Amino acid sequence: MHFFVLQILLVAPLCSAMRVAVTGTTGLLGRQVVMFASNIKNIKVNALLRHPIDNSVTPSIDKDATSSQVALYLSNLPGVTMVAGDATELASCKQLVDNCDAIIAAHGPVKPPPIQSLFRLLPESDPKHSRSVNYVAVQNLIDAVKESTTCKRIVRVTGKGEEPTSFFTVLINMLGNMAKAWNYEGEQLLRSSDVDYTIIRPGVMGRNDIPTNKVRALADDGQDLKVTAVTHSQIAELCCDCLDYPNAAKSTLTAMNVDEGLGEDSYAPLLAKVKADSRDFPSTLLEEHKKGARNGAAILAAFLAVFASLSVAVLKTLSGFISGIFH
Image: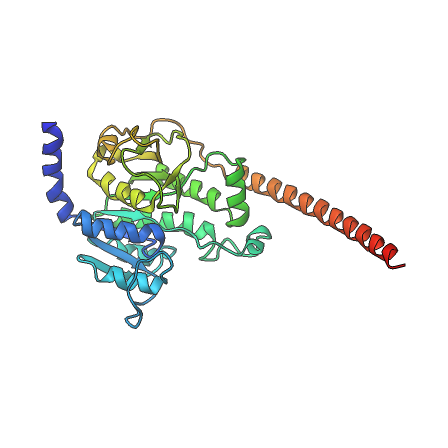
């Protein structure tokens, strides 16, 4: 108990002197990271922003607020500096990490139109493609950190991606320009670099109507936990808190919730036990992911063909029946 109190006292001044860079600033997770860092941890923030601040809008962080509204709201928080740029551009990443101690990479690709993804109409080189966002941008952050004299840690939020044939992985790859596939390849860039990293694989983010008392659970070494709903604010908390724990460097953390009362109220006692990655992660799963998506697309096409055939047969039958009635 005395050690835990002492640890808090030692960490507090470190947090107040820390500056972190954040990507994905106006996203549902990124905005929570910026707010938690600024309001709760007293951490200064360099927040990457792709568009100029629009002072004509009403500042807001509501779920349905525009990115311009969110950006204006966050820009007014204490210690927050907006940095213009894009994570898919190396020069932007170098500017972003200036005088920072760590990066919290909360960015992700925008959901594409399903047809565009199914038929692979968007080139992998496009800045909006999952390869650019989940892979190229991660390499840019690694390169920026290597050139920095202050920034030594990357916290990257990804997701489960080691099961290329699982239903949800196949579905997300099919409809999201191979988002799961490139997320895992981005993880491997971090593991193969000499940069300190913490990879966070959260549960399903989006719901806020879930219990949050004594529910937090972590598994290190990228081990599985039962997939559950987690809140964006919980994962933002984890992103910031893990920076206080040197032992969480070079670790892959699965973050889920358990039944109320069976977990922890905060991530602190869980992070204190975290160990660095020790198992051999597959060096690449790209081809397995692509194969899974191709098979999924083939099954979907076959299903649609059968459905269309049955629909035509039913319509013909109904047409014949109706014609018989009126003749």
